[in-house]
Image (tube, rainbow over all chains, first blue to last red; front, top):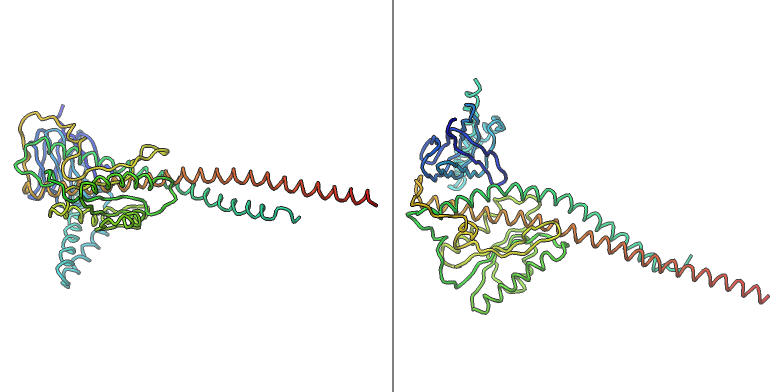
Length: 140
Length: 289
């Protein structure tokens, strides 16, 4: 039997995923992380982006996380997301629109606060698009 | 018939009141189901983050977060969670009574209090007590937005970090079941929840790998933990509010029904007495002729 690691993905408003997987891939603050069973304890901040889970049957499931924390224990991974979504539910048109809007805001710089905010929005929109992209590649 | 006009109008007005209380009861009942669902939905996050914090307490971190250190108490902060609206039985009164008891203790020790209000109902109460209100979030509506709560929480957490307050409590109602809500006052800062500490068994020395660094990560984690805790308090309080209102309105409707039946009885008696008297007068008049 393949070694598995239990994954919980929760956001403030609900539980998104809970179950055993064989591999977790997520975007940490310092880069992509691949987590296999018996990983040593790790605590990291997550950047907006996809979280990929490899299921027991070899299939992959992709979730979108808008940032949060990931805690790794040897047999349990806990992802405390700010907001999380099944990648299939992401709306590409909305993400593109958000990206365009953010870029526009950044183009006519108005005060630092708005700039920083637009930047964060842009990062999120790009991350969503990246997740959609990944999901599409997976299907083909 | 002219008899019992006052009684009839009284019955009418009680019937109108009863209609209102009945409607409020039904609205509260349907909202209660939704708020309870939301309370359930918020539970996994709260449990997971508690586990993570408990793990953290079990590890031997290189860095101790100020949120976990006890300090001598000179000033305390209270986060008071109440509904925006009244008409929910003894819910608010019970919470305020519990708060008063606490405030008195602090007062006797010469310790001052800063408060932060979530929900309208606590504002006049704290004003009357001359408590210093540092932040408020009111008119939350039926769907509390975590973003709106972040403001007041941040104010108090910052006050704690800067040493202006040495303890932080949250006061809210705990949902036991539809009939029972219990006012509770929990200590948020400093330190870990007792429940978390009880779960921890220290086995061997280990520590996390922190990415990027322990300081900012723990800061973020503790902040999330606090925000999550407050969010849960608000959501739970809402479920309490709806349940309490439903029960209060149900008993109001029942009381109205009782009153109506009593008044109806009096009215019928008066009417009968009037008829009897009239007949007696007619008979008396006929006999005289």
